[in-house]
Amino acid sequence: MWEGLGLQVFLMCLGAVLCSAVAASAPLEHSHRHRLSLHRHRERTGKEGQVLHRSKRGWVWNQFFVIEEYTGPDPVLVGRLHSDVDAGDGNCKYILSGEGAGTIFVIDDKTGNIHATKTLDREEQAQYTLTAQAVDRATNKPLEPPSEFIVKVQDINDNPPEFLHGPYYARVPEMSNVGTSVMQVTATDADDPTYGNSARLVYSILQGQPYFSVEPQTGIIRTALPNMDREARQEYDVVIQAKDMGGHMGGLSGTTEVKITLTDVNDNPPKFPQSVYAMSVSEDKVSGEEVGRLKAKDPDLGENGLVSYRFIEGDGMTVFEITTDTDTREGVIKLRKPVDFETKRAYTLRVEASNTHLDPRFIAWGPYKDTATVKVMVEDADEPPAFMATSYSFEVEENAPDGTVVGRVHAKDTDVANNPVRYMIPRYTDVEQFFSVGPEDGIIKTTRPLDRETLPWHNISVSATEIGGHHQDTKVRVNIKVKDVNDNAPEFATQNEILVCENVSPGKVTSTSVNCCI
Image (tube, rainbow, N blue to C red):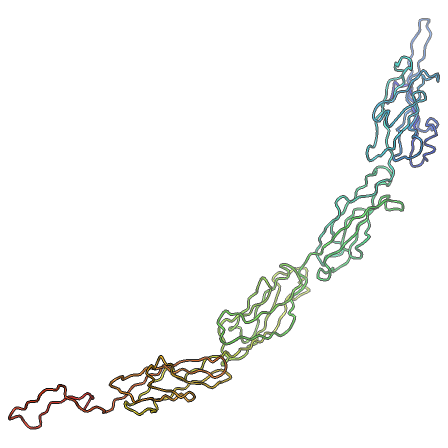
């Protein structure tokens, strides 16, 4: 490989097997196992016919190594250059050029010893390419052709593993099977992966057991317990360690935190917190008005916790309806049609709450529904009194004395309280106050004689107001007809002078009367 060279290089490897003291003092040329001798012979005839022999001088070569991070008091001996033409008289001069020559690597131009004068870091630069040459000290003419060689910086375990992307966040469904993959974490080690175990990493879990485990070689985190329930615990803080040297004692380590969240699945049925609900509705409510609400609790989230409600039996299925409030997840019971306290005072309904989205994996855990009983009591509304007739018609003779009974109206409080009723005639319906009504008995009487010829009909109203409660009242129309009596003497139609002719037949008169049918 290095034909044409007559220079010998002796290498000293400052590996892990050699101590730094030996590396600094022992000449490489004493380690014959690292020598490689290349020789080529060339013959030519002199003028006198003398056969001259020239030995091809070659490098005794091997790869150079310098251990990194060396901190000894003396420069590290990398190796020694030696040429076959060097007679030891000081005429041979050794020259070093290339990466780091003169700054990092220096050479004794007389002995050929190469030293590293600075601490080297393999992670900054792993190798250096240099050129060696032997020249005549007086003329600087090359004694040997130049040749390149490489100095490799030998790695030591000086870098701990690092997780570059931590902390990590991961999600895994609750109730996952043991061994379900959660995520993979990866650490890096700046040490040389091709040399020794400095960069061979092993993963372990420091915090998070017995819930999770990690594969030592891959860093894959998996579930380790069955039936982990989000409703019991949702968040887990897991600490993962990466250790080099294959995880053995003396290795360097790094850690990272992994926050694992259990996501929700539909593993819980809805459940009513009580088996019986009591509600009430007033009989004066109209169709569509809300009666009450009930809620089945489901600890699942999102669509997994959605609940729908329906009636499955009861005597009020045609009277009430139930819908679902999507915001509060409550069942809302409303009136489908009005109720009447006097007709039916209570209803019983059976309500079912069920999940709308089922997970096939957990159907066997079902049923995903629950039932409850709802008892609805109808409340008596404070209704106004009701007259027994929608209107009344009476007759009274004209000129009847005041206090004459015209008729009687009757109203009743239909509420359960059955409060007594007080009657009165609104003034605006009987401005002249021709009539009075008994406050307690509803008997209508005249307050003065009536004159048919002045007003033949009286149309009044009677009001009935409950005593107690909310004092609600109601009115009824009363029509009173004044009957005619013969209370007017006949009158002449005109005040004319009556002339009787002679010879008029006896009994013939002329007269008028305001009464009818005289």
